[in-house]
Image (cartoon, rainbow, N blue to C red):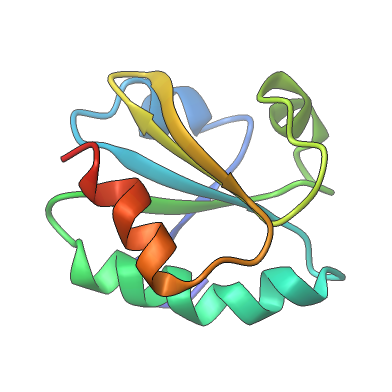
Length: 108
């Protein structure tokens, strides 16, 4: 994982997301998912632009199916914004950068 995004797993999800002091944008993705690969550069840009305000992480649903199931992720990419340990907003499917900025800005 390059840049500012964190790799999230079952092992660190509670500490990195649910107990985080800042909002956390979580990208549920998989290596075989074309739209996931298409949105990845945008997610990375958001991680850099919101550094210090929002934490951005990625969950590989193939390696962490229990996390995807726990949050009702039925299709990918799904981006979920967590705030104070709870789901604050989410976006399913390929989205524009503008839509993802709104997802974040509504909860800062």
